[in-house]
Length: 105
Image 1: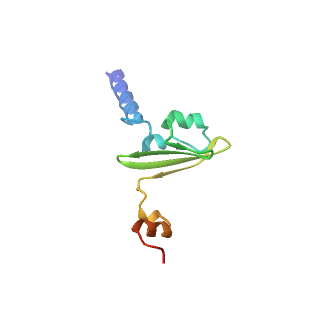
Image 2: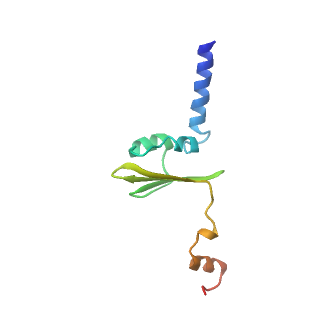
Image 3: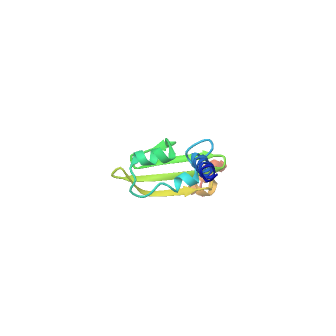
């Protein structure tokens, strides 16, 4: 009976880590640690949506979330998570005015 319970608990944990539809989840993001190399991050989160030399960006739309993993010398040096959608308030003032169809004052 204990073996069956342990097996079920392991299966539930594996399903939670799999993220039901992709590797990029908050639970998996929390597994990424400073000092990990790129392959370790890819093994945890999967392929990034966007890459630069210094960072990888992961995102999903439903529910919205975004993570940026920053690398220095091939290792994680910083990471950030956001559940907030970028909106007009995040646009520079001149860009916001262009979006409204008027000239900046």
